[in-house]
Length: 463
Length: 144
Image (cartoon, rainbow over all chains, first blue to last red; front, side):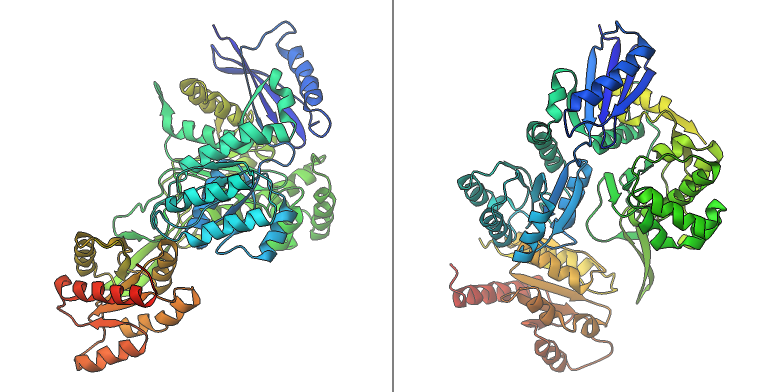
């Protein structure tokens, strides 16, 4: 009989713990400790647990104990494909969907310069794609050889042309490189097939990376089941689709603004919402995640400032330009900084608003009018989010601000007149993840989907 | 049966898809692997698809009279993309107005297409030619 669940997020700054009553499906306590993965991950965990037990009782036993991790740099990946808009793009989608931090994307034959870059990036895992099934095999085979001669030691996931598999297996196994061979991320032109690669990445994460990073020291107490971004993505999925006996809320977009990155997740097929629109290019994933590595409220506050200018931030925060510039410089080197005054809160708000505007513009698809001999045709590139039912904000900036400000932040992700042909959400219901509990629902979804759906819905507050 | 891969589609801002569908079906029935890109296909996409699929030939359809403009530089783009030995065929209503076919054909051959076909061409008219051209090319390249 299961009563209590413990859910842990091993982050890069904090170790966050949440206790859930699994009968009533309610969050009953939460506490955090520092991230101590550099020395011993269990130290921070025990500190958090001490705090948590003060809330829920010292004698409690947790029947379910699951964790996700973005500690020790997260899951750093490099993807390699053939044509940038085709297999390279498909491989990138697969890695992002598996919760990875993609630090390098390579296409065509990898060069000596690429190899130098690759060594500098020192990825945890490489995803090697290229060629449709039965298509180009020479480039992926050659790239496998290059990786071997460059003395790459990390595990490699091979998800390219089926006909090149045997040869690549031989090349990598001769070099004693850890590998997983799985289905092609793009088996034919403009057909995306990223689930097998996502699953392979997750397995490599669990079987190798968790150990290599010292996260498995916590394994006697909690089971690490996925990278943190995947937990959020899984929560979005179960929320959109629902589960047995629990209706879903439909297609949705989820915005997660952090210190270093701004992530957008969307659930839905994103096909044209009007029949006369023609889709072009590689279809995008049903579960799509994008990570804007240049947009964040701390490490990357300066690049937001550069992108939008100090006057815009000054207007949104009603603070002087000079004060904004000074604040941005200060927080850029202080990852865990928490605003101390109403003025600082407003500056974080302005930074977040700009980050969200840029990130959703990059995530959403767009329409393009083509003039043909028989009149106009409308072509769609990327995902149509215009009909999304819900738009959800998660992360500190949503939880810390008033409902009114959270609402304004989410409106920045919706379609405005100046967006023209961009396919952003048009009239979604706006929610915030008030208890910051969606990742918990994502973890719970691995063992009990209906309860995960209930928990995820309980996290949402309409704003 | 051949195992050649053919990339086909309608180039440029052209929505006339029916004829190209018939070509794709006929090629499949003749035993080719067919990569069908549909209508409104930019020249670049033909080439990118040919790279990923290691295609043996690209068949370009154009029915709205702008073919000459859309196909300009097509062979050069193939060479840039490393597709040195690919066969290029083009067919349809390639130019606006009434023109002597042989001058139109010459124009496209000079642009680097291996074959050009006038309106009204049936699949049975060009498929045997395609097979023959591919066999000749493979022999020249020393492939089996």
